Image (cartoon, rainbow, N blue to C red):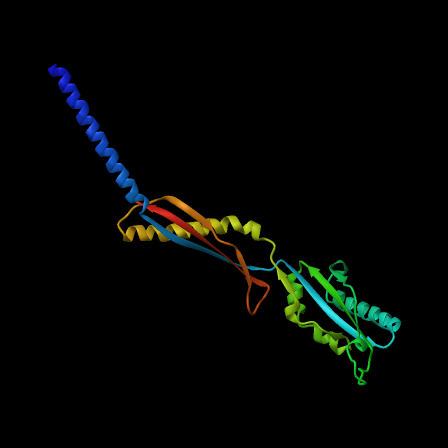
Length: 230
Protein backbone atom coordinates (compact mmCIF):
# COMPACT_ATOMS: atom_id res chain seq x y z
CA UNK A 1 0.00 0.00 0.00
CA UNK A 2 2.83 2.33 0.82
CA UNK A 3 4.38 1.70 -2.62
CA UNK A 4 1.06 2.36 -4.35
CA UNK A 5 0.60 5.55 -2.35
CA UNK A 6 4.11 6.66 -3.26
CA UNK A 7 3.52 5.97 -6.94
CA UNK A 8 0.21 7.83 -6.83
CA UNK A 9 1.87 10.78 -5.14
CA UNK A 10 4.64 10.80 -7.74
CA UNK A 11 2.14 10.66 -10.59
CA UNK A 12 0.12 13.45 -9.01
CA UNK A 13 3.24 15.57 -8.61
CA UNK A 14 4.26 14.83 -12.19
CA UNK A 15 0.80 15.79 -13.41
CA UNK A 16 0.90 19.06 -11.49
CA UNK A 17 4.36 19.79 -12.90
CA UNK A 18 3.24 19.05 -16.44
CA UNK A 19 0.15 21.19 -15.99
CA UNK A 20 2.27 24.03 -14.66
CA UNK A 21 4.68 23.67 -17.58
CA UNK A 22 1.82 23.75 -20.08
CA UNK A 23 0.36 26.83 -18.42
CA UNK A 24 3.80 28.47 -18.51
CA UNK A 25 4.28 27.62 -22.18
CA UNK A 26 0.82 28.89 -23.03
CA UNK A 27 1.46 32.21 -21.31
CA UNK A 28 4.90 32.37 -22.91
CA UNK A 29 3.50 31.73 -26.38
CA UNK A 30 0.88 34.44 -25.90
CA UNK A 31 3.57 36.85 -24.81
CA UNK A 32 5.85 35.89 -27.72
CA UNK A 33 2.97 36.12 -30.17
CA UNK A 34 2.49 39.75 -29.26
CA UNK A 35 6.19 40.56 -29.57
CA UNK A 36 6.58 41.47 -33.22
CA UNK A 37 8.14 44.24 -35.24
CA UNK A 38 6.90 45.53 -38.60
CA UNK A 39 9.54 46.92 -40.94
CA UNK A 40 9.74 48.09 -44.53
CA UNK A 41 12.46 47.35 -47.07
CA UNK A 42 13.11 49.49 -50.13
CA UNK A 43 14.72 48.66 -53.46
CA UNK A 44 15.23 51.15 -56.30
CA UNK A 45 16.72 51.09 -59.76
CA UNK A 46 17.38 53.73 -62.42
CA UNK A 47 17.20 52.27 -65.93
CA UNK A 48 17.14 53.61 -69.46
CA UNK A 49 14.09 53.12 -71.67
CA UNK A 50 14.45 50.31 -74.19
CA UNK A 51 11.60 51.31 -76.54
CA UNK A 52 10.02 54.55 -77.67
CA UNK A 53 6.92 55.56 -79.62
CA UNK A 54 7.21 58.98 -81.26
CA UNK A 55 4.11 60.42 -82.97
CA UNK A 56 4.76 63.25 -85.43
CA UNK A 57 1.55 65.10 -86.26
CA UNK A 58 1.38 67.25 -89.36
CA UNK A 59 -1.50 69.17 -90.90
CA UNK A 60 -2.52 70.85 -94.14
CA UNK A 61 -5.52 73.09 -94.97
CA UNK A 62 -7.46 73.69 -98.18
CA UNK A 63 -10.87 73.94 -99.80
CA UNK A 64 -10.73 70.89 -102.09
CA UNK A 65 -10.67 67.48 -100.45
CA UNK A 66 -9.09 65.69 -103.42
CA UNK A 67 -6.29 68.23 -103.59
CA UNK A 68 -5.94 67.98 -99.81
CA UNK A 69 -5.35 64.22 -100.00
CA UNK A 70 -2.73 64.68 -102.71
CA UNK A 71 -0.91 67.35 -100.73
CA UNK A 72 -1.08 65.23 -97.57
CA UNK A 73 0.51 62.28 -99.38
CA UNK A 74 3.31 64.55 -100.60
CA UNK A 75 3.86 65.77 -97.04
CA UNK A 76 3.87 62.22 -95.70
CA UNK A 77 6.60 61.20 -98.16
CA UNK A 78 8.61 64.29 -97.24
CA UNK A 79 8.34 63.56 -93.51
CA UNK A 80 9.22 59.87 -94.07
CA UNK A 81 12.30 60.80 -96.07
CA UNK A 82 13.31 63.33 -93.43
CA UNK A 83 13.42 60.62 -90.75
CA UNK A 84 14.99 57.91 -92.92
CA UNK A 85 17.74 60.44 -93.70
CA UNK A 86 18.17 60.73 -89.92
CA UNK A 87 18.93 57.00 -89.81
CA UNK A 88 15.55 55.52 -88.86
CA UNK A 89 14.55 52.31 -90.63
CA UNK A 90 11.54 52.40 -92.93
CA UNK A 91 10.06 49.46 -90.97
CA UNK A 92 10.04 51.62 -87.84
CA UNK A 93 7.82 54.25 -89.47
CA UNK A 94 4.06 53.89 -89.91
CA UNK A 95 1.20 56.23 -90.75
CA UNK A 96 -2.02 56.69 -88.85
CA UNK A 97 -5.55 57.43 -90.04
CA UNK A 98 -6.10 60.95 -91.37
CA UNK A 99 -8.46 63.20 -89.42
CA UNK A 100 -10.40 65.82 -91.43
CA UNK A 101 -12.07 68.85 -89.88
CA UNK A 102 -14.76 70.74 -91.80
CA UNK A 103 -14.60 74.25 -90.38
CA UNK A 104 -17.95 75.17 -91.94
CA UNK A 105 -19.54 72.94 -89.33
CA UNK A 106 -17.83 74.88 -86.55
CA UNK A 107 -18.57 78.47 -87.59
CA UNK A 108 -22.18 79.62 -87.88
CA UNK A 109 -21.62 83.32 -88.47
CA UNK A 110 -20.82 85.00 -91.76
CA UNK A 111 -17.17 85.12 -90.76
CA UNK A 112 -15.56 82.01 -92.19
CA UNK A 113 -11.95 80.75 -91.98
CA UNK A 114 -9.77 81.09 -95.06
CA UNK A 115 -9.83 77.32 -95.64
CA UNK A 116 -12.78 75.02 -95.22
CA UNK A 117 -10.87 71.79 -94.47
CA UNK A 118 -7.92 70.86 -92.31
CA UNK A 119 -6.42 67.41 -92.61
CA UNK A 120 -4.23 66.15 -89.78
CA UNK A 121 -2.22 62.97 -90.03
CA UNK A 122 0.23 61.23 -87.72
CA UNK A 123 3.44 59.53 -88.70
CA UNK A 124 4.56 57.17 -85.92
CA UNK A 125 8.12 56.07 -85.20
CA UNK A 126 8.23 52.92 -83.05
CA UNK A 127 11.79 51.84 -82.32
CA UNK A 128 14.20 50.21 -79.90
CA UNK A 129 16.84 52.72 -80.99
CA UNK A 130 16.14 55.05 -78.08
CA UNK A 131 19.50 56.78 -78.39
CA UNK A 132 18.71 57.87 -81.96
CA UNK A 133 15.40 59.34 -80.81
CA UNK A 134 17.13 61.22 -77.99
CA UNK A 135 19.71 62.57 -80.41
CA UNK A 136 17.03 63.79 -82.84
CA UNK A 137 14.30 64.94 -80.45
CA UNK A 138 14.96 68.58 -81.34
CA UNK A 139 14.93 68.12 -85.10
CA UNK A 140 11.28 69.03 -85.66
CA UNK A 141 12.22 72.69 -86.09
CA UNK A 142 14.07 71.63 -89.26
CA UNK A 143 10.86 70.18 -90.66
CA UNK A 144 8.88 73.30 -89.80
CA UNK A 145 11.50 75.45 -91.52
CA UNK A 146 10.72 73.46 -94.67
CA UNK A 147 7.06 74.52 -94.47
CA UNK A 148 5.65 71.44 -92.72
CA UNK A 149 3.03 72.44 -90.17
CA UNK A 150 3.51 70.28 -87.08
CA UNK A 151 1.42 69.76 -83.98
CA UNK A 152 4.03 67.69 -82.14
CA UNK A 153 6.13 68.30 -79.07
CA UNK A 154 8.90 66.49 -77.24
CA UNK A 155 6.56 65.38 -74.47
CA UNK A 156 4.49 63.45 -77.03
CA UNK A 157 7.21 60.79 -76.99
CA UNK A 158 6.33 57.66 -75.03
CA UNK A 159 9.52 56.17 -73.57
CA UNK A 160 8.96 52.63 -72.32
CA UNK A 161 10.88 50.05 -70.31
CA UNK A 162 10.06 46.38 -70.90
CA UNK A 163 12.66 44.64 -68.73
CA UNK A 164 10.82 44.83 -65.40
CA UNK A 165 10.19 41.08 -65.21
CA UNK A 166 13.96 40.47 -65.24
CA UNK A 167 14.55 42.99 -62.45
CA UNK A 168 11.75 41.88 -60.13
CA UNK A 169 13.47 38.89 -58.43
CA UNK A 170 16.65 40.75 -57.46
CA UNK A 171 14.74 43.85 -56.36
CA UNK A 172 12.41 41.82 -54.14
CA UNK A 173 15.43 40.03 -52.67
CA UNK A 174 17.16 43.34 -51.99
CA UNK A 175 14.06 44.89 -50.41
CA UNK A 176 13.63 41.84 -48.15
CA UNK A 177 17.28 41.97 -47.05
CA UNK A 178 16.94 45.67 -46.27
CA UNK A 179 13.81 44.96 -44.22
CA UNK A 180 15.62 42.25 -42.25
CA UNK A 181 18.54 44.60 -41.55
CA UNK A 182 16.15 47.17 -40.08
CA UNK A 183 14.40 44.48 -38.01
CA UNK A 184 17.75 43.16 -36.73
CA UNK A 185 18.77 46.65 -35.61
CA UNK A 186 15.46 47.03 -33.77
CA UNK A 187 15.93 43.64 -32.09
CA UNK A 188 19.48 44.51 -31.01
CA UNK A 189 18.36 47.85 -29.59
CA UNK A 190 15.54 46.18 -27.65
CA UNK A 191 17.81 43.37 -26.41
CA UNK A 192 15.71 40.79 -28.24
CA UNK A 193 16.44 38.02 -30.70
CA UNK A 194 15.01 38.25 -34.20
CA UNK A 195 12.69 35.36 -34.95
CA UNK A 196 11.02 34.08 -38.07
CA UNK A 197 8.88 36.02 -40.54
CA UNK A 198 5.29 36.20 -39.41
CA UNK A 199 3.81 38.00 -42.44
CA UNK A 200 5.31 39.50 -45.58
CA UNK A 201 3.69 41.86 -48.07
CA UNK A 202 5.13 42.82 -51.44
CA UNK A 203 4.19 46.31 -52.54
CA UNK A 204 3.46 47.42 -56.10
CA UNK A 205 6.31 48.10 -58.46
CA UNK A 206 6.18 51.72 -59.64
CA UNK A 207 7.90 53.18 -62.70
CA UNK A 208 8.23 56.96 -62.96
CA UNK A 209 9.89 59.17 -65.54
CA UNK A 210 12.75 61.41 -64.61
CA UNK A 211 11.36 64.95 -64.76
CA UNK A 212 14.21 66.22 -66.94
CA UNK A 213 15.12 63.05 -68.84
CA UNK A 214 11.95 60.99 -69.48
CA UNK A 215 14.00 58.17 -71.03
CA UNK A 216 15.38 57.51 -67.53
CA UNK A 217 12.96 55.40 -65.49
CA UNK A 218 12.90 55.31 -61.68
CA UNK A 219 11.73 51.88 -60.52
CA UNK A 220 10.73 51.36 -56.88
CA UNK A 221 9.29 48.59 -54.72
CA UNK A 222 8.64 48.46 -50.97
CA UNK A 223 8.14 45.24 -49.01
CA UNK A 224 6.52 45.14 -45.56
CA UNK A 225 7.59 42.31 -43.25
CA UNK A 226 6.41 41.32 -39.76
CA UNK A 227 9.07 39.53 -37.67
CA UNK A 228 8.65 37.69 -34.40
CA UNK A 229 10.87 38.83 -31.52
CA UNK A 230 12.19 36.49 -28.86
